[in-house]
Image 1 (cartoon, rainbow, N blue to C red):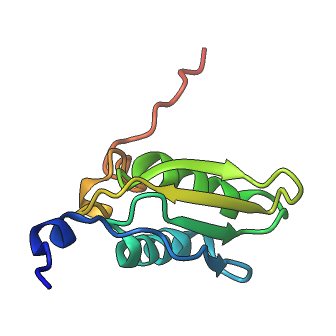
Image 2: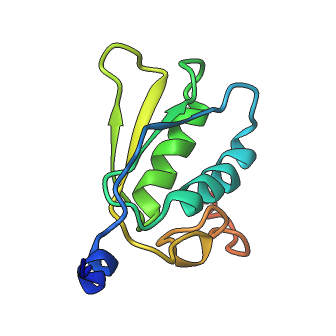
Amino acid sequence: PIRNTAMARRRKKTPKETVEIDLHGYRSDQVHPELTDLVGRYEGIRGQQIRVVHGKGSGILESEVDRFSRNDPRVSSAEKDFFNPGVTTLILNGRTGGGASSTRAGKYDHVGIPPIRKRKG
């Protein structure tokens, strides 16, 4: 039998199952590198879902996950779990080559800019 290898090469990777990461116990500065590494492992798979458990708490980890999802070009959307507000699901768009170097706004972009102070008077 003759196989159509050109067609087999054109097939895109399809998501197999939802991946989960639990960020309980992480500090806010540890979230971005961890998510960058995890998304990097699954980049290029359109529709891949990554379930991020950040907990309810004070919302610091949730805001870091939200910031990551808005700034990483490989993430197409982030959906909050309706029944569990301590979980966000990231959905990848299939792009490759993202990561820290291609994010639109870095965490430390403000470093080196002096703060604006109000005048007394």
